[in-house]
Length: 197
Image (cartoon, rainbow, N blue to C red; front, top):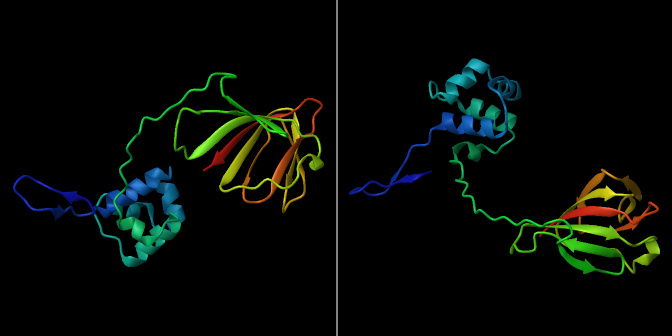
């Protein structure tokens, strides 16, 4: 709960407005009153009265709210976290990324001026042409998103059958699972990769 301090007073706990909290959660999920009513099984009028602090929800109603809004019950009583913008930004102009060539890929690292990023974006030209070009599976921590920008690739993974992905196709996967790519088109394919750190 939020702590309010006024001059000459000791710390006091501001009362949580449950109706406002429920309304905030509904708004964050982009739900109308009608949609939230269908999800929770509460009448639209009842939900409106709860949100406007006209009535207090019963324990059963709170269970329905938590279940319908797909949240844990304690989240109904936790004030929303204040989001503070850090203002971090980096622009990488076309073909101005940091080159990082390997035997199978030609990477262009993007947004290299930012430190401690939560994700690493980079463009890659896939030079590999066959599975045997790799000595072993590639695997690392985190998750990865891949979008084919040009050409087509054959995406190999440890637990799935190989998949051909064409320009505009994408995949999101667990990067601890062995994976590797080879170009499948006549020209070397180009992809955009985003890896979480």
